[in-house]
Image 1: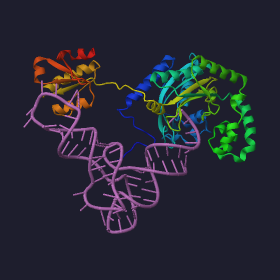
Image 2: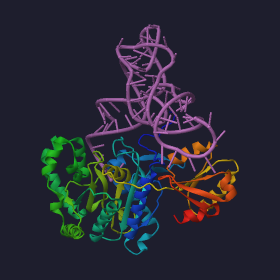
Image 3: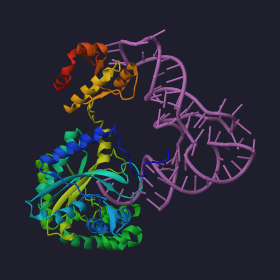
Image 4: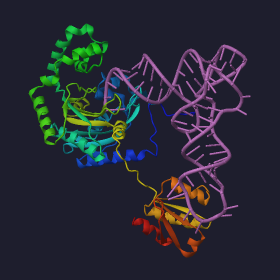
Length: 418
RNA sequence: GUGGGAUUAGUUCAGUUGGUUAGAGCGCUAGUUUGUGGCACUAGAAAUCAUGGGUUCGAAUCCCAUAUCCCACCCCA
């Protein structure tokens, strides 16, 4: 074992890829049905984009980024998430002039230098989307409903949905003052992180998991009770719309989201099946992000789903994924003269889009049979001297052993109609 | 960054108080007299026992360090 996959990275093997294809296709189909088109963005961006976009007080930026200087001396970073890159592209490509809302989905790998554990890797996959130019809250509800439809199409019971509103800069400024007043008398008892958060981002203090802080955090004034009128109306309408769509939710004032760009609506789908990393999918609104990245004042909303976590949830729920038979028929040869007949037949079948295989290792006839069986190929055609001389072959159904006689010239038609 | 557990064929695991050429199941390759797979039987290939040091006459086994994997804290998807 000389080389091994890098810490926190994983091979997705051919034997498992059908599960990914199913999830990827289903996600794309559902996104399409909501008017989203796929965008593909680069794997790395200039470091500054993430510092500004994700926020340089966040853990993601402070300690988890894969950052390096390229040979031209530019500081570049492997994307730790998708939103910043999509926003950059939105601005750079003048998408403000496109009819609103501009809706895009993506399927990306993302990179975070973290300690690995269940449901957390250094290179991981995200299915996500972003919508620009609509303040919501109808679109907020629509995006959440998109996820429930995705879960449904995958046959997954959708996991617990938590929502919250973290307000706009106006109400947050007021709330931060209130929060600081609340925590100030207890400063000495708080953890170092919280002491730092007190000045930089007091909102995160109620999210703290340290025991000493938790007891104060539990009784802390909740932002949701101090929303300005606009934000409050926004949140109320969102809730009504979710109820209208029959989507169950819990309000969790604790959801803050560790990325700085979020405003107003934040939500997550949480499961107990993916370790302590319960969040399968998280997202929210970011009305100030485009502007802070140098674009015009355009509101946005999006989410990202941890693909590995989602597939873990599927496994926990014992979701059946059907494995497609890419290869329909195996040709076994009984004599050297059969080989050219078989290669020609294979070529015809493949041109017609029908998968087939034949021996490529010089195996004995019996070994070819065993191979076809082990490979799970549903049909078998044996070609020997008899078949060549009378132009007919038997198509054997490997599952039940039955067989049917057809003309060699008719093989492509036969399988084309299957 | 901090803890706990683990690491022996492709894979899942045995391996006694340290004692000769490190074993098995599954998988893989081939065969069981050559025109039909699954079952069974036989044979074969495959292991620098994670890596590097140390203790010892002798280490897969004991000690130290490092790496990786799993789990947790933190944070997130």
